[in-house]
Length: 78
Image (tube, rainbow, N blue to C red; front, side, top):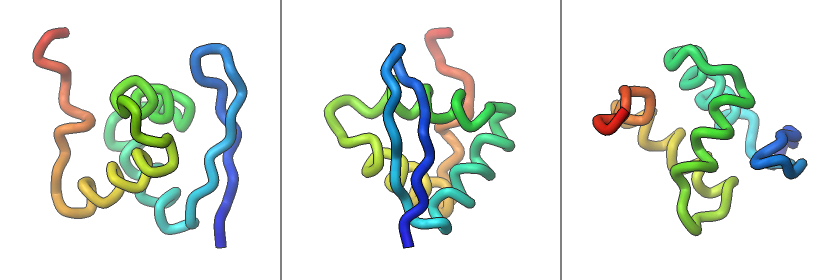
């Protein structure tokens, strides 16, 4: 079952619907990166390019569960 969360991105209100399991992983990523849920969504939005937001969230969760922690590592360019 999908769970919706609302977030404001670039001054626009939007909502994202994901399965609870994906939200659990994303909450873990936020905690590991010292980010709020809103901060995590903002970072995902900034990095997703033309990928739909829900898809970008799912892809990040899959990468994270595969051991890829690069998302929370500091950017090389500051």
